[in-house]
Length: 262
Image (cartoon, rainbow, N blue to C red; front, side, top):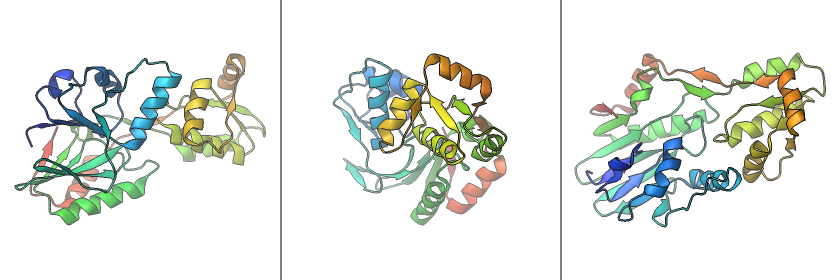
């Protein structure tokens, strides 16, 4: 498996590699697309690919999508020379994340660079934990961020719901949710509508959210409207830190022969 590169953060990591895998959306990924080596084939999920297209359009990033960037399907094994790769949907707080099972004639490796335990898709995490357990992994590779107590930014919807209860009906609110997270924009919009409040999105937020939820109604505020809404209420994201005990529980469930960090 020496000829593959997993979630590079620098162009030098991709040199002389046959295949590159991007399992979650990062700013580094956006910067690396223009310098993707022509001789390698890169893969990412359908959701990440589509979100990159929308960010490119509405944020005017000026990206030319390389022809050697391919879609990595979920649940369908991909055979690449002497390597077999299976992707499963995951959740890292942004949109389109996945984990990988990497198999050759000698090893079965589970790869989970980054994930959150308490996001919008808890069931995805449970499913791939069981999937990894069933594979009898020779190795489990986790991201160093998971053990170094780096914070993942997650919306606290329970807190938001309580704060909405304290606002007068019809109050206008805004949010600083990331463009990398259209699902949370849509969920907050739905919550505001159900509680009789107005969520005013910036044009960028509204365009990105509408791209993925075309049947939802999103209200776009003018610069003045959004400024007023900011003075009324702004919902920030909160931090989720994975504890060492949560990582220990993960390892106990999967039972790999060894655990490595990258």
